[in-house]
Length: 127
Image 1 (tube, helix red, strand yellow):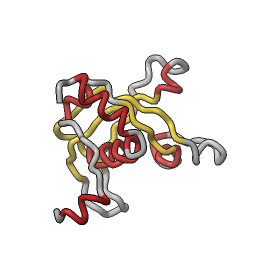
Image 2 (cartoon, one colour):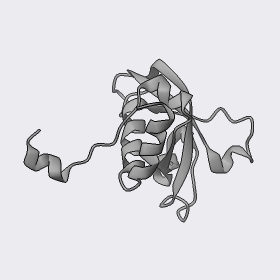
Image 3 (cartoon, one colour):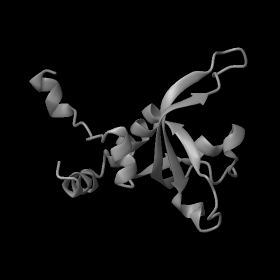
Image 4 (cartoon, helix red, strand yellow):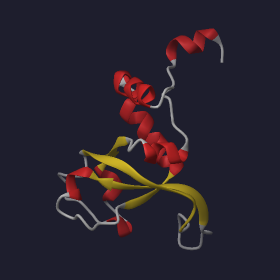
C-alpha cells in the first residue's frame, strides 16, 4: 500500500477465528440482519438499531443455503454468537451462526470509531 493511502486508511486488527471466541469478542450487529428467514424478525422500529453480539463458538466448516432458490449451498468458516440483549430472556437459546467474513465486516464496523476498545482487546492477548 502506498504511503499516501496509508494516511487515509487505518485497518482494524482482526483476530484469528478461534481467538475471537476465546476473547468473547463483542461486536454490533445491525437489526436488519434479523429481519428475514430463519433468524426471526424484529419490528420495523427495532430493525434500524444495532445489537451487541458476543462470539461463543467457531466452526471451520458450516453449510449455508444458496442465495437464491436454485443456487448451490456453500461451506464456510463461521462464528456462532448470542445477542446480549436477549440472552437473559432466552437463556437456552443456541444463538445464531454467521459467516466469518460477515462477522469480520461487522467487527470492522464496530471498532472503526472505537480504536481504544480495539487496542484494549489486543493488550489482553499480548498483541
